[in-house]
Amino acid sequence: MTRWKSLMLAGALFGWPALCSAQGVSEMGKGKPVMPASGSSMPMTSGSMTTMPSMAACPDVTGQPVADGIKPVGLFTSSCNPCGPIIGGCTPPDCEIETSGSCGWFTTGELMYLKMRRNDPVALFRLTTGTPGIDAQDVGALEGYTSTYDFAFRVGGGYLASSGWIFSANYTRFKDTSEAQRFVSDDPSGNTSILYVGPGVLGSAYQFTQGVLESQWQFDYQTIDVQAGAVYSPSSCLDMIVSGGLRYADLSQEYGTIIQDDIAQTIQTENLTTTLRGGGPRFGGEARLYAWTGRTSSLMLYGRGFSSVIIANRKESTVYVNPNTVQTVTYSREELLPMLEVGAGAEMSFFRGHVILGAGYEWNYLFEAGSSNVDYANNARFNRHVNLSLEGFTLRASVLW
Image 1: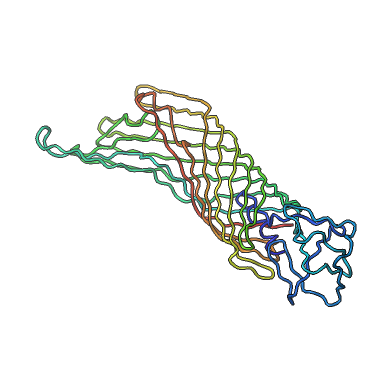
Image 2: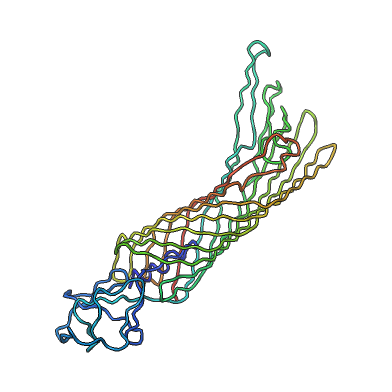
């Protein structure tokens, strides 16, 4: 039963349901599970199938008629058919009946330490040397966005049915608070320069030789997952879990840029905001390997992968200010936003599976989430396609009430 309860709770963390077994429920004797007899001296548990020690007092009931109310049901049938009646708490020899484990409400909580990554550059540093037309050289180096690890959380809960189905809902929130990046060019010879190549109308549009560039990128990530799932157990130490449902996503980004040109004695600023909101299907699976199992606890290793396709509404707005004018550009459209999630780690169950503690690492890849279209305003020759990733460490806890 320990493994049964552990499986129930394991996948509820991170929003991916896990069940204890694909075995069904016996309708025998007011729903009380009836365990098979064997020659072992101690009870042994494997999945939802329990083998009990044989009893000398149990009479031979072979060939007796089937008792009323005995009807094994579920995804798998019993290994002997029909089963004899229950006499003195015993079952006929070698008769296995599938039984279910605990069920009820559960809650989950997860503390995460994550880092957001953007896979495109923010600034181009250029160094020009030599004489033009003779030995001139132009060397460039790109600098990417930097971000730091920040804390995030995930909370949820659901219900585990005695039939082996699990229903769950989870809320995830991550807000990046990275500090602004500062780039300085102060070469009096004018051989070095900085070109801002980040998103917005300023991208690849202004270069300076002496001055300061400040750029900041902030990200707010929220998701709500509602889904259901079931498990297939190919062996006593391995479970394959399949689940699916719906995801609602709300992704907001802010890009702030300041360029101070000491030669021209001007300051230019731009504030670009992008929001993606929408919902769509989410589906995937999980594999769980039981590395060790005790009487009241067990150690599990897991690997999981999920994907979502969000039908999102994208809204972009930027305000560019220079000494001569204020330029405002907006953009809105419907688009598909694919999302990929992968995780791996280990979990330990306690108190016969009622409490599970775990740790792991997860990766999230958000296709086209960092793309921008307002760049067309000054750079109509291209459209910026950028993917984002979110990764980090996780600590999880779950309680079956």
